[in-house]
Length: 313
Image 1 (cartoon, rainbow, N blue to C red):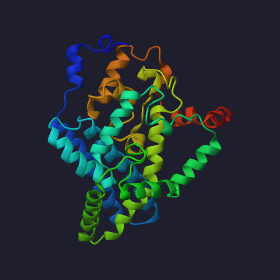
Image 2 (cartoon, helix red, strand yellow; image 1 turned 60 degrees about the vertical axis):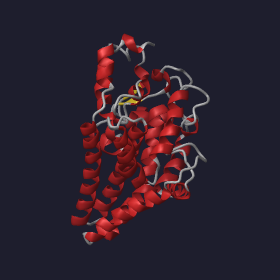
Image 3 (cartoon, one colour; image 1 turned 30 degrees about the vertical axis):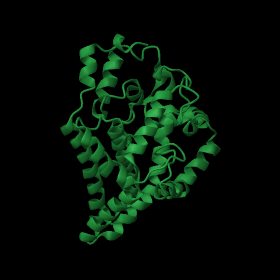
């Protein structure tokens, strides 16, 4: 595969162009959604809205992780200092992560994707899995067992599979606690300090589950996990509006496009996907694209597919 067969030099330069204002707008969008979730929870406080808030905040925590991911690739902003500063304080620290450590670790995944040395393989190499195995993972996530381990590793400054390689060290736990304390104080200033618990509960439950689904969508049970071509070792998922709100914020579902050209900013990935489709990039690789996350789950848990086949239309 040669990228020049699908993109001219001018098109490549266009797709890789970074923008401070577009990056800033992406960051602002994520935080406006977070503010809106807390506002609705404050105005209409009932079990239903609180449950929805936890789910939506878990999706936004993934959204902040994607901002951290973009900053780690130096594509969130054109200005390097903005990538460093905004990526840390408005992406990584609110979810108790470290943009620098994550970026260094994640670039190894890109370099080694499609090989047996990919450091992220433990996240997806054992798929497909049984429905019983999926239920166990789901239960660990929604009951907070996965999230508790994530929180413990974040506070101790030791890496985990969600943010960097296992055992890798970071010294940014204090900054993360500072940002979370600031969030608590802002809510307290409006007389709603108790709503900060929604952020904690989301971090312990919804966020790990959503992050797991994202991980398996990207690389689990793909056509060729150990092929160098990203159309073999990676998957792009076409998400609907609700999936984009919760499971695929900030265009993270266009993962083949990201592996093909990591220098393309998140806000251009959808355009790049559409361009590649029109150029026939996927013509011989139809299985590289999933149509939504239910399609993904049917691919990684065969019993879901069998159950769907048995249901009457």
